[in-house]
Length: 148
Image 1 (cartoon, rainbow, N blue to C red):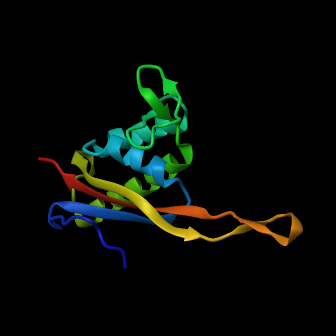
Image 2: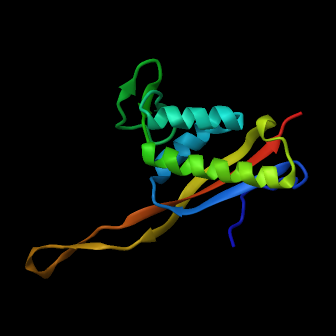
């Protein structure tokens, strides 16, 4: 069973968890930083703009070799991660609706992304050798709360 890294009052909050998603942990960490504190509807709109390549996600972490975008600084368009995050946000909305909360007045209280397990793989090379070809996974936890 997954554990959340923070405690939340179950009478005011709804949770969702993305477990071992096949996306970049670095991109997920930057998007989580950008979305923290946003209202749920504006966060979904933001992610849809990222998927349409209209809005870049500013790189706060791991920004060494990232190109600059207009009026943003170092930024990227992590479409795959945005697609997974929209699903997690919709899941949290459904959980909030099930609990009887007003979905329009929900904001993102806590969102964190960290590395999941590594899926081992290899590529055959010449002379009977092999090179690692591992795939990283990402765990994303989301807690939304109702705003008065």
